[in-house]
Image (cartoon, rainbow over all chains, first blue to last red; front, side, top):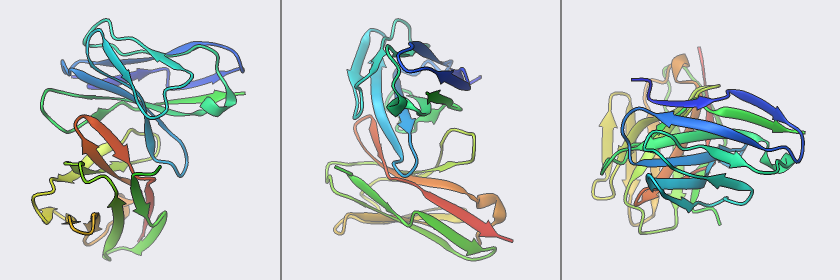
Length: 112
Length: 110
């Protein structure tokens, strides 16, 4: 059981470039979410999904797209990176009626 | 609007001392209050959690105290150890989404 995995661990982008952050879980969890972590601001919810084919916006969705074609995968896309998107990104999953969320190890993204 | 306010921002405690971190929330619909522990370079991991129908929950050296009328909850770490040095986040949940506090960096000095 790998839990929640994220790739890449580190990424540097130039302003305007696009990229996809990958997230996968092997726990058959229905609920998956993306957070960004910035100093002094805790973790803020970007997008979430309650199952394959169903996604919704969180607190800070602008500049990010998501899709959920399978239960296991929940990629986060940056269409045109901006310096304000420099952050650490965490993917999390949660199963059924359980409240506990399991977090991945994070992706540190720098946009120059 | 910050729905969960956490203090202090940083905390230094001597080994064997008690670490106390406080959080206050605004939304009375929140029904689950977890604390997460995060070590550098790692994702947050659930430490302990409480529902609003109890006033205290203890797991080993970690205790959550919950005051529903004041809309406050706190984490107490008894006999703090250097291995407890990490960033701690409180959170609150209504349904599936978690709202996090801003975090407290705890340093336990040997």
